[in-house]
Length: 342
Image 1: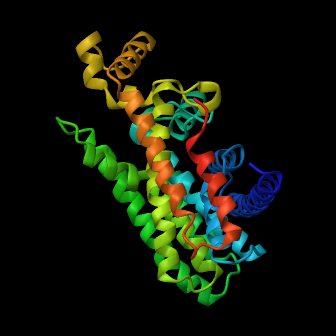
Image 2: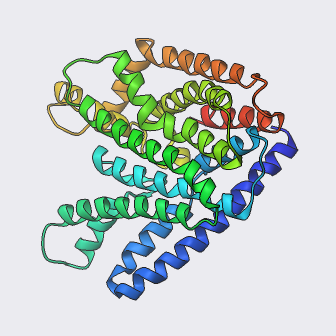
């Protein structure tokens, strides 16, 4: 990464961080004005949103702005920051559906509220309290994503251009999430189904749609530009999701913030019962299943797919309809998205 591109991305990330911090400060004050008992809600969401995160989705939106020949303004910075709240919604609900105990090295939201229930000796069933809290906090993050976009200060014309993309992105995300949980009920595996899940659960809302959102913010983006950004964003989004899947199985917990093999515990419960006669896979079981994935060549094949998809995406950058100011950003963001450490 060139020093100039690195500085540009960092400056953009810093601006997004400032806007998110200010927004969460305002929303936390509003929640507390409703009731002091909402303090755990505001604290948990503020911590979840602000303590970590690569801000990839807003950065891809910024690359979309630059690819269309535009530049960032205070209003558009707020607008693209709204994507992080959509991401928060997706992660909170995803952890709940997957039964994940941790996220970014901390307890997942449903586990956090479950522990509050236990520590405060509240009435009722602690896991149900954690589950319901996570559903509501995820929903609140989704509402806030729309609120931040609507109050960002972009013009009515810009908002009119952006909203169809923003709406479609949210529908695609929810569709992908359902397909993911539905896949876990199937008796057989299918590559085409897996590719569809990778595209809609993560790829489109991580890369393609943020690129489109940024491009239309910059002006009346041409259909040719949106197609070119899709030719880059769709294969890269799939590569991103496959990298995420590998990290979920083989990742270093100190890097990923989640236990190694976390995805295996959800996706391979039937195999764990076969091998161990119990529902949860222990660390020994994770190691055995990891070795199975390596020895069958599945891990190597997935790495090849990631490489091929990334190459396809990078080739699309050469399309002359993409403004030169966006090309370096698209190239470096592709590396950030797919070369994450195991």
